[in-house]
Length: 142
Length: 119
Image 1 (cartoon, each protein chain N blue to C red):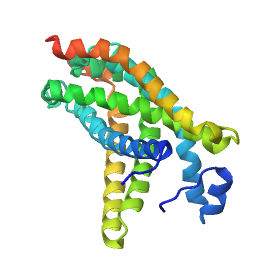
Image 2: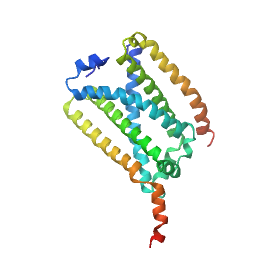
Image 3: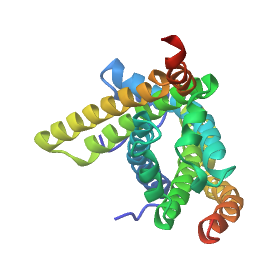
Image 4: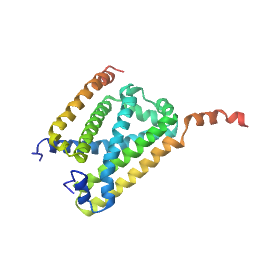
């Protein structure tokens, strides 16, 4: 689809399926949230500090905080869905032949799903504070 | 290829920054997941590699892409959901470029010395 709808009424007329209309709306709603989420994220982690000082300890201490876990979860979910859908638009615009289009989209979905699962695991499966405490308490538990 | 006026350039920049940011996002989430291997895992070596100056310049470009894509995205939302914005779409695009520059200058002043000051 080379020409995309210019407003909500045109979008309703253009998209034959409800899901395409839903994605059109989602891109705008998530975009609004992402302006806030990404600006805060970039300012905190890249502008207010020298990014060359970022190391394992910095990331671990941030991910140990519940507020960061929640904030980053919204960031991860919105950004991946927004980005993956944008890449899907691009694939559909530039890959016209069914074969390459199918494989490109399949690759996109598999990679996005894998990255999402790994991201959620990083945010929630590992509490560094608790992990450290558990390891330090190993001896006293015996 | 692009003989259109501002609207077409706005679209072209939105598309290319969007694709670049989406690909960066996938790489970025992947490298953060490396912390799962623990403090002696590959994370620090990976980051040390990316702390070289060409990648830090790349990160500045990522910030620029974020700011442009975000502001032009707000412009698109206004165009889509209001009746009046379309009359100002061209000047709003120059506004997007202007605000991107205004945000960019202090960010460059903060970050460039960190990259080239041996920090």
